[in-house]
Image (cartoon, rainbow, N blue to C red):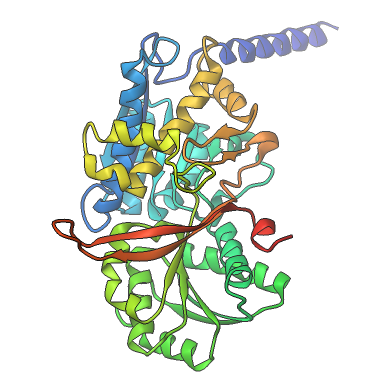
Length: 413
C-alpha cells in the first residue's frame, strides 16, 4: 500500500508540474517583447527573393509594434543570411533556438534549409509559422505531437501539381501534357501531384527529368515537342524553370506552358521576355490583391503597399515581399488569439488550431484537427509585357486571368 501511495504522489507531482509548465511563458517571451527569427538567402543568387521576403516580415512587425504590439509585447525579428545553403541553415537554426532563444520561426526560408532543419525543429517543439517552400515533407493531414508545431501556409508542391493539371484540362482542354521536372524536392513534389491528378482526369503525360543545375535542357525540350503535347508543365523553381522555357523556345515550341507560383514575379517575366513571342507562359498563384470585381485593390493589399513603401516603395508589387507580409500576419494572428493568456508553445499551437487563419491577401488556412496542408486554392496568371509609353518604361508582370479556385471549381465540378 505504501508503494502505491508513493506512486500516486509521484503521478500527482508529475501532473502538477505539467500543469505549471503549460502556464509558464516560453523562451523568447518577456513582459514587453517576443523574439522570433529565421535565416534566409539575403546574399547570392537568391537574394532577390530573400531580401524582399524578409522586408515584408519586418514591415508587418513594424506596423504592429508602432501600434503597441500584441498584449503589450513588441516583436523582435532576428535573421541570418544562410545563402540558400542547407548546412549553414541548420547552423543558424540551432543558434536561433539555443542561443537567441527565439519563441518561434517566422518565414522559414528555402527548400534546402527547410528540408535539412525540419526534423531538428520538430524535435524541439518550437512553432514554425510559414515556410518559403512547398516541399512534400510539410504535408500532413493529421499532425500529432511535435508535428503540430508546423504551420505551412504556401501551397505545398504536390497540391500545386494537381492544380496545374486541373488548369491544363479545365482552361486549355489538354489531353496530352508534357512535363519537364527537376530532380529535386520541388520538381518531384510537383510531379507527384501531376501524376495523381492526371490519373483522375484520364490524361496522358510525357515526362522528362532534368538536373536542377542544368544549363542545357534541349534534349528534354525536343522530346516533349516530338510527343506533340497540348500543354507543358514546368515543374521547377526560378533558374531551371527559365532554362526549360528557353530550351522549349529554341526547339521551336509554340505550345503554352505553366510554371510554379514560386516563379510568379516580374523579374521572371523579364528574363523570359524574348521567348514570349513564341508561346504564352502562365503561372499559378495563391495571392489575390483585388476585391471580387477583379479591378479594385483590396484593403489587405493597400495596407501592405502603404507600409512596405515606407522602407522600399519598389516592393509594393513584389510577390516575395507580399509572402513575407503574410508570414508575419499569420504569426501575429496566433499571438492575438493567445492574448493576455500565458504565451508558450502549447497555448500558441492550440490558438492557431482554433479556427481558420485569415490570409490578408486572400483566403484562409485551416489547421484544425492537425491539418497541415497549406493553401489549396490557386488563381491563374499570364506572363505579360506592357510596352513603353512616353517616359514610362517597359513593364513586366504576371497579369491575373482567373480568381482563386479549388480544383473542383476549376474543373466546373
